[in-house]
Length: 292
Ligand code: SF4
Image (cartoon, rainbow, N blue to C red):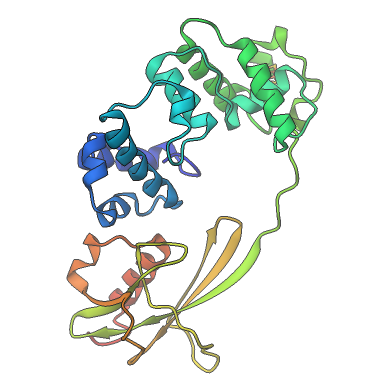
């Protein structure tokens, strides 16, 4: 939940998630609709699907108990080395390192690490360096401290070396230049056109089979709407894309599509929708662009 999202935003989602799915069994048995609804607004919806797939595997294969071995954990959907090590360290206090954004920054500076942490070799070597420092006991406290050190003291732009508790061990000559990373891929621009169709208190929606698989979106338009002005326009980021969403009022669109459905306007809050489409709908319904 914390990927690209601040803790203050996540807390409400986290508590609500645990209220709805307090254990692996309830998550495994939930409908995909409920799972996506609980996740809506957090983005990266593959994580919600992976959590449910993991819950199903844990129930079926491990009798509802998460395995303690990092090798077994990494066989579960969506769990990579970082997540497996974080769970093993924080939940089971195993003496394992964690390399994530904050700890990677601290470690590359402590060791004056010259390689790119985006490369396979650089990443592997950093994990080895990290493993050398983990204490045999209280690894969870040590890992928490390292994350906090990166978040509060060894920060990206202006590390506070003057008050750093590990400055006597630090080899960084130019800490601001670390960690070394490959340059990011350029942001691609995309344009999406969707229809806004309302009839007798209902709105036409489509269950997405692409980016937002399983969530409800405004029906995509195939043809360019060059001669018509959109009734709503917004720009939002999506992974390495910058997407322009244009919505056009329509009285008629193709309805004979098994993924399309008329949804009552007063039940919109109970279905999963990605944030850009929910924002568009809230705006359009409050503006009464089309008579309901
Ligand atoms: S001395 Fe400076 S660069 Fe080194 S770990 Fe501390 S804050 Fe980071």
